[in-house]
Length: 525
Ligand code: NA7
Image (cartoon, rainbow, N blue to C red; front, side, top):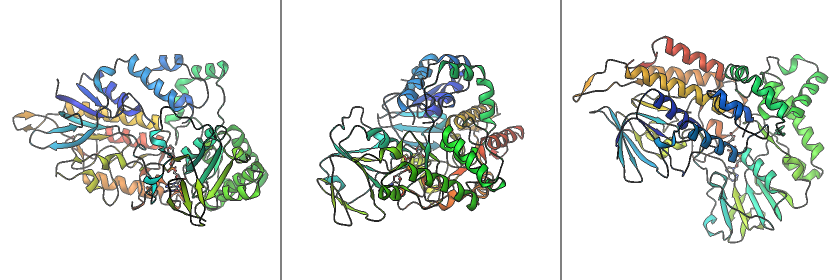
């Protein structure tokens, strides 16, 4: 069995699949290692949650609604892998347990839980932003005799009919789970810590006319998305909320509400909702009014109405608030009556109530961005793991490279762009494959009798990039709200700037500048 490769790619999701294709197309030998038993990845507008580079396929591949479901994303990725004959380079059901830089031979040595020891010149991590689960650590949780799930490892088959179900968490996932299960279960109790602002998704059937319109302008659509801030396919507003009168503001909010999409509501209406307190309050008040108008029971409504800034990842739904008009759907405010412990029968809260449940679903999120890197011991030039290096907060150059970790490239590493993910993934894959090609063409140093070129970010470039990311988020109200976007959702973890908030267009401009300057900020180039 082959043990030496030009590149090992960890993860066979959106990033890993495209990385594999790009490197194979360059004539390199590639091995993709994936822990799951098939290609995967972690919903958004259908037409932009795919790859832009196979236009013919984009125009033909079927999709039924304007939003794409997880199963459809999986089917699409499987289809791409078959169409481009990439499965032969992929090894599934295999976890990388360590990766060590061998400075004598200028190689990455990768060990797997299947007992393999593989070597490669380049190591590309495509491990996803949000796959490491944040599982709540309540006392007695192991004693619970009912079914216990985390949304990150959802059972293939489940039957919640006639059952009493508790859902912990009401972020994007919780909102989707609650909306989806409300009609199916006997009783639904939502254990809510922080109410969130949720706007309609605007998910409708994609008619043949709509599809034709998209197909006819796909190239322009991608061009617009890649030249926008968040790459969701709408124009971000350039107007401050207070630049128009209150009636006009209301009209703009209402129009966006009817059209749907959380990002569009937050960034397509006005430009300053995420950083101007007054603008933020106007948007928040509009959503609060909608919640009051939707939820008939005033007690439930008051629990669902947020009190803090509208400054987390903008959420959208397909009838979330309406579900609370059903008698069997209720909210337990766990800020007011915190969960003290789990019992065999369910969850006890501080007011002494034991909420008896057959099923508990933890929609409690993920240790975002760096969680997957700190799980695998990845040791660089100094033998230090990324986990240790990032003890005070993760860092990188361009979200792609880390000093002292030569020839290691990250797709969606810390301090990469905060956008609709596939377009950013493509951008980074194309940058990384260009950098690998460039490195391969360098006149390499003779190391231990072997010539192998090496490239890595400089410490100065990493520091400058950190400053850029810091400054870009300095005025953001997002920074004042505890959420995964700043790593503030995991107990014991220090909040830090995890993203580049300059938008995709600016990010692409930065990368172009780096390339034009001969891969500025990289050592060895
Ligand atoms: P999120 O957005 O991190 O939401 C997690 C939710 O779980 C949120 O409501 C949390 O409350 C709640 N939570 C977290 N820990 C606990 C404990 N211990 N007890 C009770 N409730 C808890 O994760 P999602 O999976 O919904 O979404 C992640 C991203 O995936 C999303 O933004 C999309 O981009 C896709 P809190 O708000 O912290 O008070």
